[in-house]
Length: 101
Image (cartoon, rainbow, N blue to C red; front, top):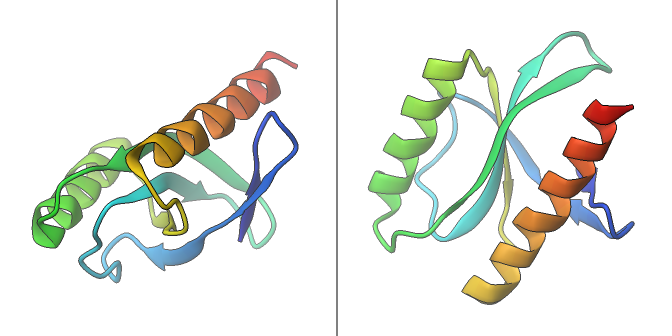
């Protein structure tokens, strides 16, 4: 799945169910509630920063379960912590603008 940032840049994400998500390293994520085959609601966006993949997985599952997410969208292509933060800001800004309309 592609998410588009406020900059217009598209970011590819791998989609998992909340419980099928594998342990993951440093990455960006979007927690999603699937409304229908074509409609999704974004519940949260963030970055995983631990080198411990099982801690990152626990963070995603705990936060996702608390918010009622049923999908996790993972972006693994940021090459540095700075780039990962830029991806997060770009996607959050686009989501904020979409909710304002």
